[in-house]
Image (tube, rainbow, N blue to C red):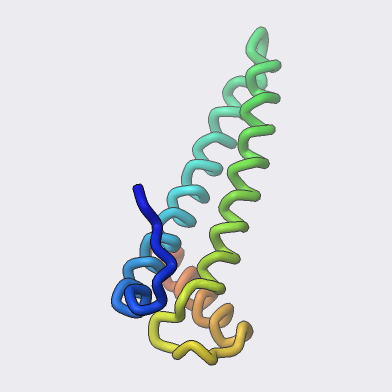
Length: 106
């Protein structure tokens, strides 16, 4: 895989880049949730050491998800323009996540 930093190619791909970051963030959060559930199951009996290791992995995945969240905000903005403030971008992201959670609850 080759990554180019040519500024002439980035604007055409900025929506795809942000969608990829967003998808990875959602997958990381889902993985952390699933791993936490597994850790709860493993915490009983002879497998408690495995449960502790899975909990450690959950912490690493959670930190990775937070890094992806930060990357989302520093990636080229979708519709806000390149000079959008961080608070505007973060507000948009939080509204998007709230809507996503509401859709899942239905």
